[in-house]
Image (tube, rainbow, N blue to C red; front, side):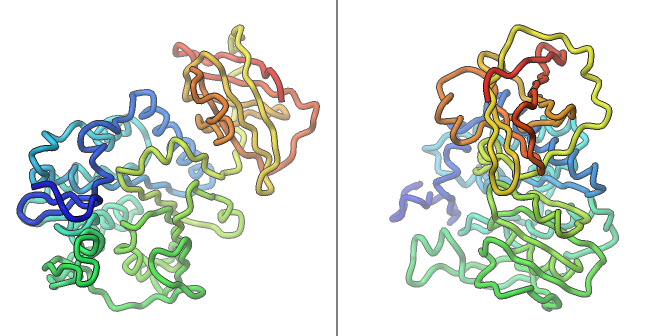
Length: 378
């Protein structure tokens, strides 16, 4: 038990199959540190605050790995399930004002149905509808029940079954979503795996932007029916420049648990907005320098840097007498340069150039206080 003819598939109990890429999460090998959890929360908080300034609602929905929800069918040789990253996030986000959807909690309340496919990495129709109804609730659409669109069908299973039997696949009876298609795609699409998909319909007067992965494949037909315009993006890092050409009512970030660490290594392409009335004037200056690099990238000014010796996820940059929140993420170039050094990296984008003689100043939260630091070079 636990071995299969394909190394990517873990054969579990009672016919359950699991994806081997989820094993580091399951065993605790891939557990994020407290600092990394705080960093991820900060990265999401900056996006939420930025969108709130624009009057746009933000929803963050990490999707649990299947063995986080159903550990009881895992082979014994992998031991008991460790505390997972998504469970740590659930606790961390409870103390924020972010619209955070806790699917672990929601799925734990489901008693009579399963919410994932036995022979696929993804949720089934039941799991998808539970997630979507929670999104709708956050959007203020709480009087719409979608459960009537769930039907039992014998289907040919997806990824894991096909990995084991590539020529024939496997069949399984699963709850699936069946809904008459009432939306149109804008432009041609090949599959639901396309990098970007745009849809329009006569649905509710809402424009939705969704950063997503393959779990959203099940949601796309339903959401596209429900909302007037939807833009789905698989791009990593998240690219917010689409908001320059279209107004959205809500932005949804959906990502599977096994890929959560991608969010702390990829800086969202999001032109920063100056903080309103920042109270940093009396900040204590400490004897600390930061290394700064300024470059033009994709039509934006990118300011990135590294603060040696200090760990902080709350970093602000002053440029042209305005103060901006920076993502606590090192650029790929600086990750290579400072990989073995202790300290804090940061990056932000501006949608305007800054002059060569601009004095760059930094502010960080250090020992519960906001302190100021000077730039070393750029």
